[in-house]
Amino acid sequence: MAASVKDQVVEIIAEQAVLEVADISLEASLEDLGIDSLGLVESIFAIEEAFDISVPFNANDPKDSVFDVSSVASVIAAVEGLVAEQKV
Amino acid sequence: MNRVVITGQGTINALANSAADTFEAFREGRCGIGPLDIRDVDRLAIQIGGQVRGYDPQQEFNRQEIALYDRFTQFTLHAAREAISQSGLVFQGELAAQAGVILGTSGGGLNTQDENYRAVYEEGKNRVHPFVVPKLMNNAAASHVSMNYNLKGPSFTVATACASSNHAMGQAFNFIRSGMAKVMVTGGSESMLCFGGVKAWEGLRVMSKDACRPFCANRNGMVQGEGAAVFVMEDYAFAKARGAEILAEVVGFAMTSDASDIVMPSRQGAARAISGAMKDARVNPSEVGYINAHGTGTTANDKTECAAVSDAFGAHADNLMISSTKSMHGHVIGGTGAIELLACIMALKDGVVAPTIGYEEPDPECALDVVPNEARDAKLDVVLSNAFAFGGLNAVLALRRV
Image 1 (cartoon, each protein chain N blue to C red):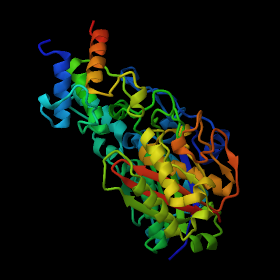
Image 2 (image 1 turned 135 degrees about the vertical axis):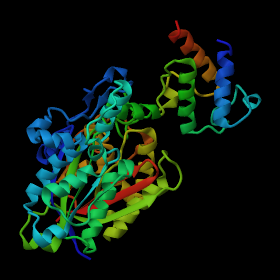
Image 3 (image 1 turned 120 degrees about the vertical axis):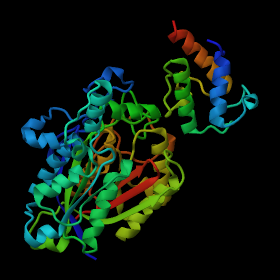
Image 4 (image 1 turned 90 degrees about the horizontal axis):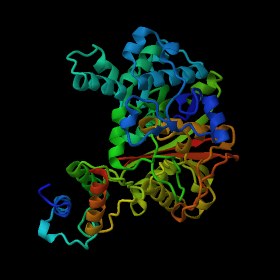
């Protein structure tokens, strides 16, 4: 894979937030970046398509989902974990 | 303005294939949700639903009819037969011209679409059955009801997602109230439990993988159902004159639009519809004893709905009962309001309030009497039925005991 997981995830989030990649802080929450609930499920869909993985996420209880969406960094870590787990 | 009453009811849903058996299931708090039995279910992340079981179309329709009737139309005709037969009406001459049919559905003939897209895209076929269009169109069910029963007055189909049936029944009510029609057959139907239908819902990530637990702290989403319910509404004076059995009176209806978000519900939009229905019915909030909730089991709907009920009723919100029968039959999308109206009629006529089943722990954001797990006896005068659709379109009906 050419781009790192981190770069690709940041790119997806930036596109969803309509921001430049450089403006995406890893500590920011998706909410801080202006991504609402629809934007979140769309981002997760884009992540699934980009990495060909399945992301366990229920919009009814984001906090309880295994997939931690509390910050950009946590999303990156979760995707890295899923890639390692599912792309063997 | 004419008074409007219900003189016939019919249904098929995950719980039963008649109104009487559905009432029994409501009283027992039975769950009709279980593993889906549909093609390619192994490719779905969501594998449960409120599916109609033990239903054989060949027992009800001949080969030519089945060629024309999508599953949502079959469900409608099944329910219409029960309702119209109960009403005792035969539509001829002048009455036929003054009788129409307004039904709700969100997806129409989705099984027909699914099967035929599969044939041309997946199987590479270049030919489809000649009746695909008349079978899948959203108004197919309403048209077949009109043809089967000679209903020659105002007839059409309403598609407002999860509020379709309530919008349809609200129109039927107002047609009779205003004198545009004497009798209206109304309700709704949905049959979205096919691979494409469930796959589309999966995408939103609001579906539960285990159960529909409305108002419960650990609820985790909605469960889709299928089925239909159909009612006969008629002018009170006409019903009275012919000695018909009156099941309930429809006294009010209101619809509002949130004008805000395509999926997130609005507390204000819902509250305005609830208050509007009471105002239209000229009932005082304190007269309302039961609300059949929209109660989808999603985090967003249930807390917003409870807040809206509190806004509309003030302190009386703590005295009334509110339950979601979706916990039993699933969310029947465009047909759901019609199936849920059955619970309203049962509450008024039989004095039994259907429960919210699967209820495990209270949610402080849904701190109302949700009639957990067990049906309750109560003498009620006025009840409401809520429906709040994606797209922010809300429709609430008010019924009174006769």
